[in-house]
Length: 219
Image 1 (cartoon, rainbow, N blue to C red):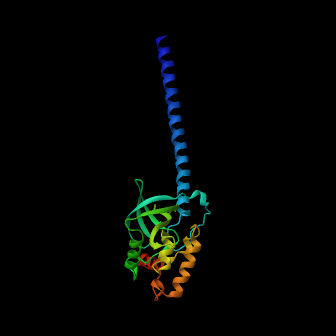
Image 2 (cartoon, helix red, strand yellow):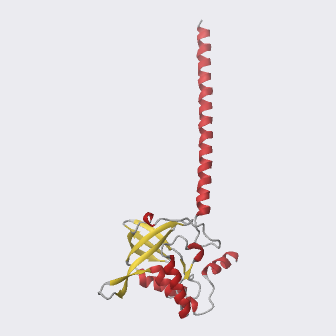
Image 3 (tube, rainbow, N blue to C red):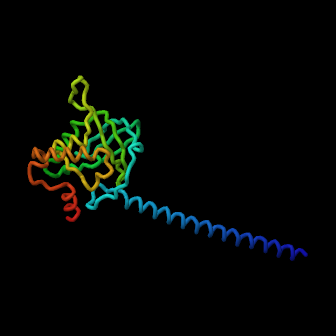
């Protein structure tokens, strides 16, 4: 009788072990499937995100202006003529300006472009409108700042920084990545004016920064 009890006890334990193993295998399989689909979704997001450095046009995703929230931030660093760092109430962001591409620092007019950006926003309070993120984690945004110019009523004008850079000939309209920029038209018009005046990047036969980066990658 004791032996029979031990046999049934052993049988119950073995059955429980088998069920436990089956459960663990099932959980691992489900986790693997879920992870695979999450990974695929992440890869699609990366593929659909603008690189802001590449050669192919970005996939344009329509935006609603109501979804783009304005934020007041402090400029903490100017990297070049189209990229800055800001502090937004403790949140630190690296911003890439929407729809413009400035000469690289190692190109002609690269230092001049950065100098103008420093003059416009360096150490100042800015208003940013985040648009999206690129695949490098930078926030693509439009930026406004109080300018040095005064209106007829004595108040200082609010400058659209992207338009100021383009209008001064210190950046190009980055057409393949401007589809989501709310103020794209201002950028287009500013570049037309800079071309007519033949100033900055339009004063000579300079290599476009996107072509320069492509050549650097090839080398």
